[in-house]
Length: 539
Image (cartoon, rainbow, N blue to C red; front, top):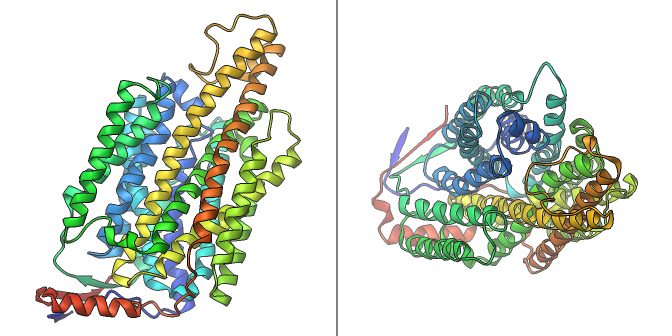
């Protein structure tokens, strides 16, 4: 340990390829656990909610509660990464996740399950934010594309493969749905052990100033917004006094958060980051990517099970074209970016593919040939693989090393926010469209449509009479097409945003940019040198 009288920059460390892969293995396990926790229950939820005697609102909140907690805590974890040991933080997030998973598997009611899913989301938020930050600390931007491909591949397996794993667990009689929560625990424990042995990063210890007021206001604003989006159109109308109160409250809390962040010495989400055009445009694109990443995985499973009558396991297998597309594009494009240092063309191409994939998925019906679906899903997977990690890479390449945590978490925060809002909004659209389509179909059969729709529990199409089954399958198939068509404009927004991002060739070192040196010298001149800094290394 040494002491200094001026701030020391949190730069990266020189590591061999083998050392990076060893440390990365623990991070990848942690990321797999985080993504798996959000997606593994997708195909298992009908069985879970039925056994715990929950209603439609509980079905929604089991998914939304985790996304909400992940979204709200991501910037907090990112900021803490700029202030203290990243290794301790990522291990803490794993411990929180394991605790939440075990308790969720022991739940005896939907209320207990939702509370435990919130705890899981807090841990997952830390894993999501810290994996990006630690990678940026270890690996130079020019080399980061190579390793980001591995991270993208893990995200592919967790995001799209989670429903498949959940389906297999539910369909296996001697396991049961509780193992959907236990399945991630061994991976989390393995990640803890691997990280302890392989991750050794420099630590810059200084006086920690956590912006608790900012964190509280940001969390409250985001939570209120997501609660409104989730309940609007179900518990009350979109245009109602309840909506007006909640939207106004979210706007007021958001305005107060901006005011507090502008005045805080250590803001959770530094407003100055948004003066950087690359960060601002990357945030806009990340929201759209979040809609695609979470919306596709959640609603595809429902489409295959209800519209096509597939089992949970088979519905997971049928999403393989998307998994393979994301896997291939993440790994291949990551290596090309490392070799060339150019990244913008792949963001543009990926956004275009994402838009095209959503637009084509907007044409699906319950009887659409599977080979058509395979092409459409592959396009979405390729688009996600080209954009998801490279948006973070573009942002990390433009900020100083001491702000990597805040900048990386901002992108992850808005991607998760886009996913949470997207799932809620698209789910509400699906519910309304399905209700209308079922009513129309029953009327055509001469059956009164009063009381029909999707407001109760999800239908088991295998138990329905032939003509009614066709009506229900057609309604859910047409509704699924409608929500993917509604998602297509988000892909177009991402495409426009990345077109206007200015490409800066990737730096070949992990230290601060030249501009950061000027910033730090100014800070020292302003009196920041009074802080006592202790430097060391994670053990």
